Length: 159
Image (cartoon, rainbow, N blue to C red; front, top):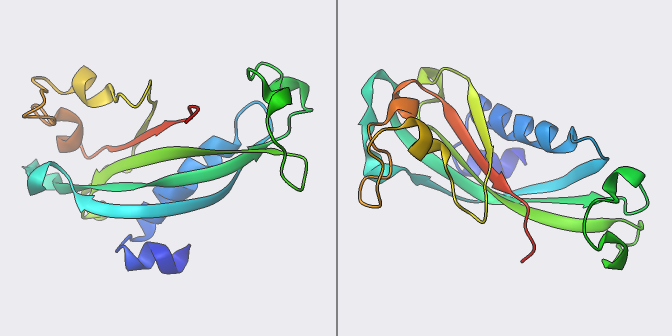
């Protein structure tokens, strides 16, 4: 992971965000494990717009892969888990897309993360907290970004 993260220009705080993301994912009530994280792109957010003293933001996009034990009673609520194919370890593998919106200069952020489980790929955090968001102005007034927050969008949905 260090080589791939370094290639995309992530610094220690970015790695901390990804590590925290993995820990949050693994800390679910049932025993779900993140087995790998693949960063697919790092790109400027909002055309490079600067947010006060925090500066510009970037999107880090990727896929987290994991596995759950279908025999664990805590996983019984997962619809049709007993019908899912098993890997060599007897686990059901899954993947989830994620996107992290974070300051380009991580030292200017406030080191607070806001995590959102997206509903059918729809992110609501910016529109809930930033005033005036629209298709042509997705950051709205940039309230969250001006505060230096890092936003994580993640979801698990059948594909």
